[in-house]
Length: 403
Image (cartoon, rainbow, N blue to C red; front, side, top):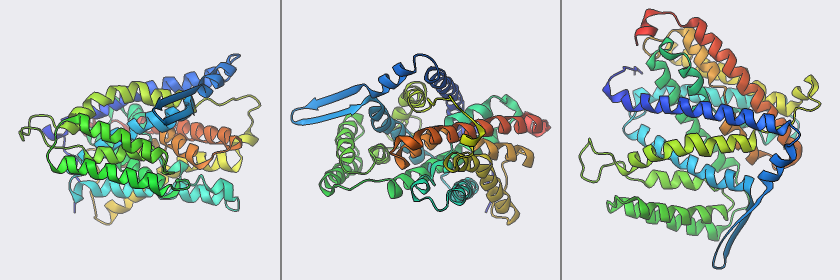
């Protein structure tokens, strides 16, 4: 079995997506920086008040009243997971993960990149049951941030490396979805789950009957989101369920005509990249640096997250990749050197958005909030800087420039 990346016409869509993610990564960085500045300024009270602003929606007897922060994390992030679901479905049916040979290397790399950080975190926090709830925080990779840093290198990084990172991060997102579904659910409401299941059956019925209009899927999806929100399962998973039911065939059956899934993906990308994710970053990256010391950075939760992301993710991704190639299970990305793959593996430690999100599910008490944010920011920042430096210094082969 081989895993070979060749830059041909079929990769144009994936490369365009990579460039889009790079621009979104810059927006994420600016939003996170703004949150840090505001939360450490004299108007930090305004930042906290903004996130605590009550927002309510009422339709007849049904009323949803939540602080703005929860609307961002439960509502807007459901749109993000909807987009992730669309990307996962497209990649596994038509894209770079559509065959076993293509999917094997990023699959193994992603599994290694999730397992090693979890072991590091658990080892550091062993004996503290409350802290152990955060074991999955350093297992995630932020697509926008990591691809954004990689794109700063321009043609110094071969296109095959960019596609490999994209495939790895998408599988990583799928792993995060599974983790959230299995380990971060509250007390389940069977009635709400039954209604959500009924909504999902309606979606698959629409798909089976060949319905190509988006509106029925969206309206049914909103119903499912409300049901899941009340069920105890995290509401963002409703976005994935809806996404998997969106048709990936064009209304006329012509391959050159965009399908409903592709149309939705294209129209949602700008909103997710430049509005939803930056707003999430702004709402969750703010942490006071007052009284910051090495002792606080060395607290088990903070250290476990930071060490899991850097160097844990790099060790897991690089180790699994090397082992797969050494055993002959796959081939490394075409035109990429092991030094470049090492730099890419380090970039995988940029957890940011997904790590913060999982952390918010793992820890529901304020005492862990600052530790969570510090660990994620420290680990992600180190991964970004070191990964970029490694890739920058290792870029130099003619193959890399010409790919």
